[in-house]
Length: 304
Image (cartoon, rainbow, N blue to C red; front, side):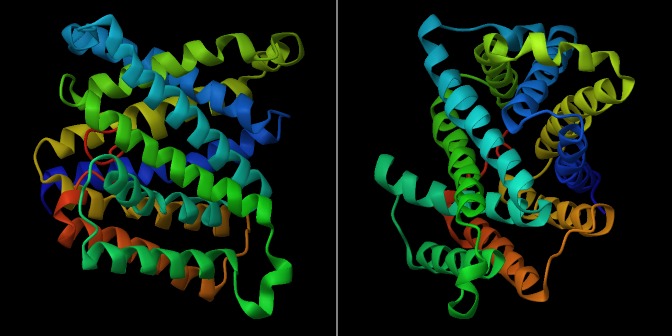
């Protein structure tokens, strides 16, 4: 297999492990927003430190007004998307939360049509309908099971997809002036600064004396964030973005395996079929939706 493909698959597989760290941090009493804070703090330090050593020029801000891009990617996307995703994991399951996250390409397609006047082709419309059908199967939104649907968890899951899509929208502007890795680093730095005054230090600071807390918090910022973004970006430099997006659909597969086999979370054959439809829609847009080539740039285009 192409070496670049292996880097991309490994990076996406690491993203799929996020739920494992999140679930374990919940065991220590952290809330979804506090886990978001831990992720962005450690990621900002690690990504910023990496660029300071490897390529300090990429941390140079060209204009002060460019901060508006990173306020969008850092606050409207990263903080909002992570909060929604971690809340969905808390209220439902890792597989369901990850599957709903992958509705992001559908949101990107719609927002790009409204903001950038990108055409809604027949293929894109087909992908949107497939995504909708897959989402209904994943959350159990069917006539005979409506009573079992937990609406709040579904809304958080869809919110994570929308927040993830915002990254594509804001980074599309930033990519005109900055590299993908620079955008990723600035995104986490801005998000960490925004969350700095909001963490309940008096109530939770003592938890960091537990080595397990440090392990899961630092691990969340290290492997499925900093390392994943760096190696994915390296692989992306040697292959096409559309192929990278398709390869990265290994993420929900890994997340499902962890949820089902590590945490014994239920995930039926119908939900599996729904996830398959959502992933299929992602692949369809990448293969045939030429003007939608930047779906999920947080992971795909440049990474973050």
